[in-house]
Image (cartoon, rainbow, N blue to C red; front, top):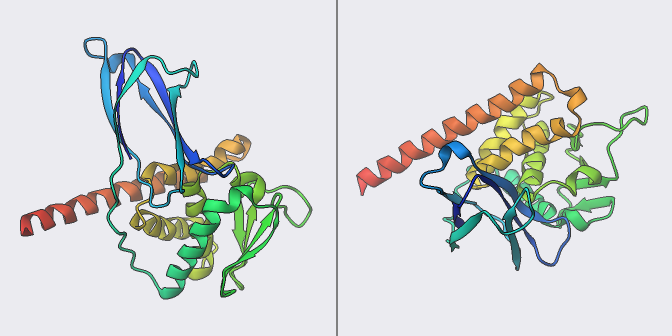
Length: 255
């Protein structure tokens, strides 16, 4: 989806896209700021591209002034849809099967009630819980966790229903990597999941949201290790983008 927005004054434009027939099914939620310093001759124009490797049958898009909730302070000059190229994902067959399962769960879990959800061939299992608790019954910050022996993933329904579908997908890929690698460390699971996530062409900004969303929910738990984790993800995205640009330039030269 490509949008061209012309701001008529300093404004923050909110964008939301969701399944018209299913609650808690946001495909994107973001804000586009137009700062006073960027205004030229009383206006500013930006073009926004939103990648949607998954989409519903009917997508509703809301665009509005985030401060007033009204359609003022800006003009939509472009609204176009463009078919995405096929994704090229290099992964083991089991991971490809998990991706299919995880994408389906990400799309529809916003309306699921707590319970067990497995893949058609019973290879993968997700347990959707109201919230995730520790052994003492205390609610945990994490939106999901994995049994590294069985690969079973537990998901917090309270957290997931508020996440966008790309954020859900990143979380599930991250949890699978804890079993796939296997590792208890967050950084290798983050980066392995991020490589797949970006290869699938999900929006880069949503991966950053995924890394910081949990911390924002519980700011009292944030420490230096969380800041480092988010920075690692941002750095990886920058390197990935640079690599993709180099590869594209080589293809153009070859043609």
